[in-house]
Image (cartoon, rainbow, N blue to C red; front, top):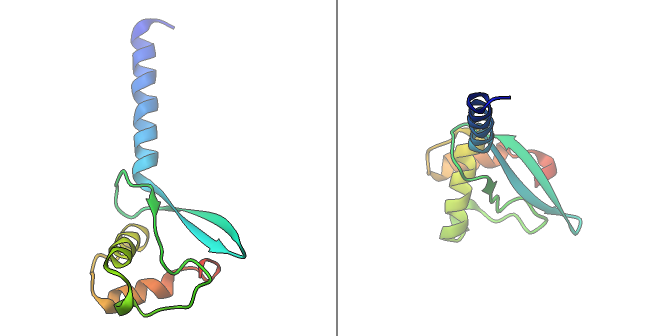
Amino acid sequence: MNAPWRWLAAIAGTSVVIVLVAYTGYVNSYLDHETQTTFFLKRYPTLQTKFHDPFANERDDEPIDQLPPIDRAHFVDYCKYRFGIVDRGTESLQECKTKIPSYLQ
């Protein structure tokens, strides 16, 4: 394989990796004393791959209005990239919460 083909292969491989990172994300859930990782396809490209869902555990289910600001901001990001919900309002976040698969709650 000569040099131009190697460069072309390297550029193509790098492009594929960037696209995979831009459109793939994951969230950890904590159930039965073990951590489960769930991968998903993002609705919008971003280099962020790990997302936080404050409801993906066995804790008591607290209302969205009572989430600490940092948890609410992480949940807004999660809803945007996983489900395409860009509104930050409580009603939209409640809709997002109902879309979370039951095995993550």
